[in-house]
Image 1 (cartoon, helix red, strand yellow):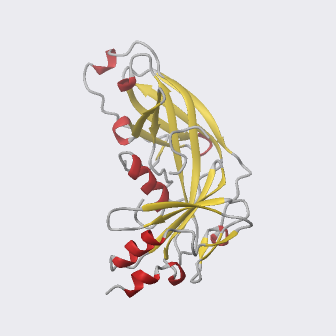
Image 2: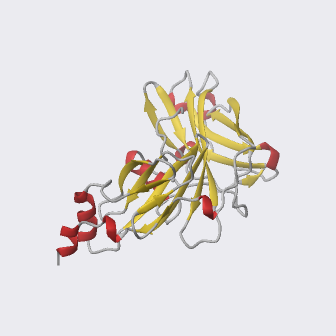
Image 3: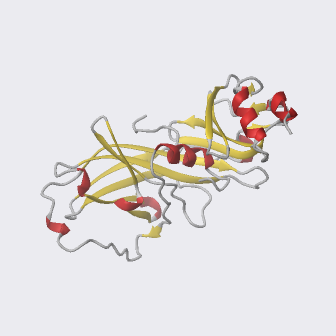
Length: 271
């Protein structure tokens, strides 16, 4: 998959893993609510900047996915869209003004000024990543075409369209990763590995675990020193789970109480 980071999801109990992974590696940005195409979008551009650029930006690659999340006890699954765009501009990296992400079939768009994007340069590629894009009033991200428009300071544009396949399933609560009290993790058979995120006082800690046949016993899969440190902090330890259903569909659940079977005996003996 193209993009500087495959594992990306906010620390509010939903989409914790991907947001935390992103925050741990680069600056976090806040998500934007969609607006209808018919609405008037006001874009503030500083005086004089419009004449700075002499060539249009070029969209080189797009990395896009849906993240479907389940909060234990919730009645339904919720989804967000995440998009990363590799943009080349002969006039320089600082010439991009905004990205626009549209769902043409639904007349929905997000207008994202560059200051509200996470940017990174990797191997000569200039990537701009959106935060979680949700649709107010819709729990599901509509499948179909996703149009991405890169606009520079002079108003020149480049656009590309990618697809969210119509065959992507609408997942329900029963499709989400689950962790029981005996430290048994169950996921759909399509998922072959997961990322575990553990909350600590100094920030989240991440571990990747392979899954075979939709189930794995997490006892012994996470180092005792991490478990001991979490339990010794005197807080209720919790874990979030992120898995890849397909390249354009990721699933996340949590927070789950850390099972007693995963807790270090030495930590349990500490006062």
